[in-house]
Amino acid sequence: MVRPALVRDRRREQHARGEVGDVFDELSRAALGQMLGDLERNRKVEPTIDPQWLVEPRGDEALGRKRMLKILAVIFIAGSLATAVAPTYGFFLSCRIIVGFGFGATGSVVPVYLSEVAPANLRGRIVTFNQIAINFGIALSYWVNLAFAATGKGWRPMFAVAVIPSAILFLGMFITPESPAWLASHGRWDAARHALQRLGRKPVEIEQELNSIRRAGELKEKRAWRELLRPGLRLALVVAVGLAFFQQFIGINAVIYYAPIIFQNAGVSSANTAILATSLVGVVNVIFTVVASLIVDKFGRRPLLLWGAAVMTISLVALGTIFAIGPNKAGYFILLVLSLYIAAFALSFGPLFGLMSAEIFPTRVRAIGSSIATFANWVANLLVSITFLSLVNALGQSGAFWLYATMGVLAFVFCQRLVPETKGKSLEEIEHYWEEQEQRVPTPTSGSKS
Image 1: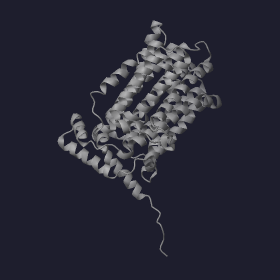
Image 2: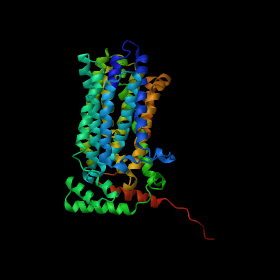
Image 3: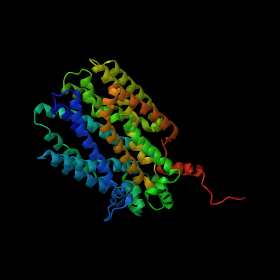
Image 4: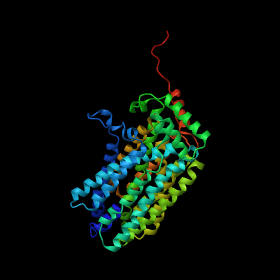
């Protein structure tokens, strides 16, 4: 809700550059809050500072996925209410950073939780539902913003209504089971069996999953981030972090953050009309994320990533060309190209980064690996936010879009060469894949025969 509200209500009479600058100032702070939130979520709860705190998560590992989500829901409720009644800008910004802590943590915990409760044949669909919910929330926020704009009540109610989904999350976690994998990893095998029963598994499936978890546990070494640097697992980390960076560097949040400004620069007459056009783009995002959830377990992860990178690259080249020729009165055509770009993103990098960052890591390092990938994603988000204006000033709008298109080409090559297909594989089978990769890496011998 913050983005369209800023475009409409603040610096309305300024020229385009000043208006973008005002949005940029707010968005940089918001992204920083989200990044700090994920950073805080990864911190070890110990009285002394450990150099591993950046990359060794303990929150949901110690408390459990379910309890951690309850705590985060309380943070969202308190943060939303405090933001709505903020008496000063400093207090407002502090509240947004606190909520950013919660959102950063949620971005890591939720995909892991969903991947651990979902059966292998439905894991892609269930985990991508998280992205559907996020995109639906983004699209809904635009429409809610327009509705509140019509009432003239200002921005405070926009933040207050965020209490509603936060309360639903809090209450919902009382009726959902804990992650069976987390329970089993803490020696609570009976509770893990009961959780699988509540999730609707058949007796045979329950025993198979528990045996798989037990076999994975037998291979468990010290739960440390350094294990991710071993050959094999190191490649899994490279894939997860690479997807995290490319999801942002292909320009998605530059497009979403500044979509109203892009439409205004293309000749759309008013801020409200630009926000309406942006809302339509948000609807496209939701629709195609739903489509992705329906086809990801049928067509696989790799084909969708490759197809998405190709179409996004073409769309970005087209956007750059439009702005190079002259975007005036090209609003409808830009809406079409942006919709194509968003549709490709929603079918590929949008939902698949969260899914794959949760499923490609072995159970013993899944929380750590997913957390590192999520943190990398927010770092990339921040970098895109704080460099977009500089890119526009240095390269022009067309040059900025062409630079993002270049990143799209690199993303295609990265996915083609390094990203494995995980469709239909159990989490334990994926772990076995990385073990095979590890065995292919030559190990230096301690000596040589003469």
